[in-house]
Length: 333
Image 1 (cartoon, one colour):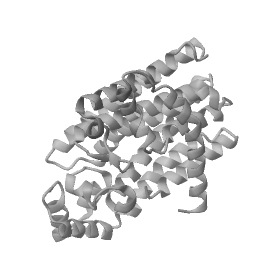
Image 2 (spheres, helix red, strand yellow):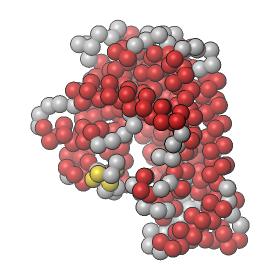
Image 3 (cartoon, one colour):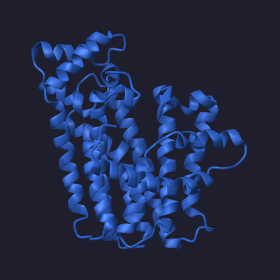
Image 4 (cartoon, one colour):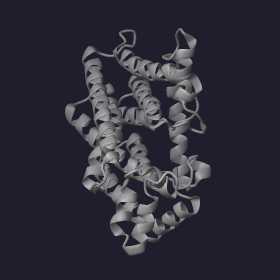
């Protein structure tokens, strides 16, 4: 990892520490095992990228970390709510290198842990004890509600796409990740702007930044699912190919491959019982097609659009948000 990327990661970690104490203080109650389950993934990893976006978006517009903390905590709760329920739907057993919530605490408590995260997120931004103007609270609730609806819509699009025998288009893939992943990035930036009690045009600009960053983030995340080091990603080699995940790298590879190369990829795609050697062969074919360069270029287009969204601002928070764009496209995890 380069010096700039290390600096950016350190900035995110510092911000995460400010968010965590506030966040975890909102996840206490009885019965204790329910709240332990709700805070479990938060305590075992995660970059806190979305809370970072909330805080930096607020600072960009003259607000403070203190103003942004309720929204930052709420967005991270919703993010973890989606992770808990995703793991249940996908029957995943490991996340962040530890057992998933439903495996650790049992299915009923796992489901309820997700539900309590969802509930506490809205309680946090609507709490009258936290001195947020009424109009700001209403706008925060509206932005977060909209994002939650879009995440659900995106999840169903993903499920429908997985069932299709045909290979989806790149446009269909982008539409799906725009809802499933990018919507929480949009909400993070919008809620940061709203927390600063600023104008609707500022909220729109920051929302555009979040939308394009979120799309680029997922594109790179899917790339890492193909080329990532299993020791770092904690995922088996070729897991996305074996599971038949219709991600952009795989879609592009299938489109570009010809003849025997295409057969090798399609033979491994969605084949849970395929041998390790054949999966590795399929990955070699994908690598030989220059997929990584193409995918990073696609992500860069969205990141350039994100840059344009905040060009008019000028303070240290802007530099942090611009550095984040480079960090996302260059990351390996």
